[in-house]
Image (cartoon, rainbow, N blue to C red):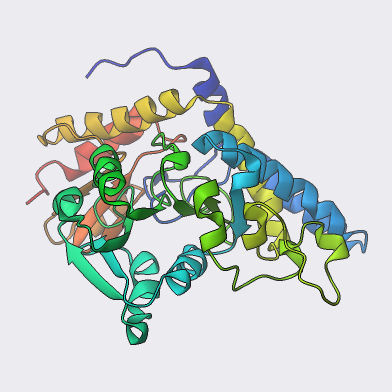
Length: 356
């Protein structure tokens, strides 16, 4: 397959990565760019020297919040920050009325599923259907649809246009997990009542960062059960005593940040922002399609490729210096910003004849 001219911004961004392997495992753990590594190392040095000051970490949080907001098409004040997807999904689950019906995809990642199953004693019912059937399964009794934009196990995309149309017709809300999407797939978070996504995969940050968005019309229906000092309108004057004085916007759902994680997340988002969303999408899906074509698979629409392989494949990949992952009994390859056509071609060469 012939190469297409590379986007100059994309080439500049790729220069910040220096893996010693052919790394195709971003769907598990993203690679940090050079600027993230340098920022975290500098912060560690400052901390070690006894010169760290807690309020100064807010700079990285503000930067990351703003960059993420721009990436998903909302205002910074619509973005909450935290550490894990399940914690935010748990807020949504705990705020549902008793007896609510939650619709989800069969085989959904459990950080999206378990918080709702845990509400069973309040009569909250979870209904699981095949991903492709999700829009048609929305009914007047459905309170919420909780689903990933991109499935973790195999990279399949939810039909977000059809889902939006179905939920708007019935009044159901959507909690969209963007963990395997934002960073390569353009997502407009404002279309959904709630979104949430971890930062340590496609957003290239350290583990310990998570984003959530809350649409203005859903803000007052979500109880900030985990509110702490960082959820205050002015966190540094919200550290002692009553009354309750939470932020007026989505920051009321903030949890106290894991500082060094945010120090690394902010520059990673800066790097992603230097490449357009469309260019990231074209690059990642283009590499996945190049691989699929080379091994005889039909074209796809995802940066994640899931294939059934023969025994011994993992050892062959390891011998070739290729890092990928096994999920749901299949090999999962993830193509991201740092990857090149050479990576896709090497993976195809090693895997040729090993697909079931």
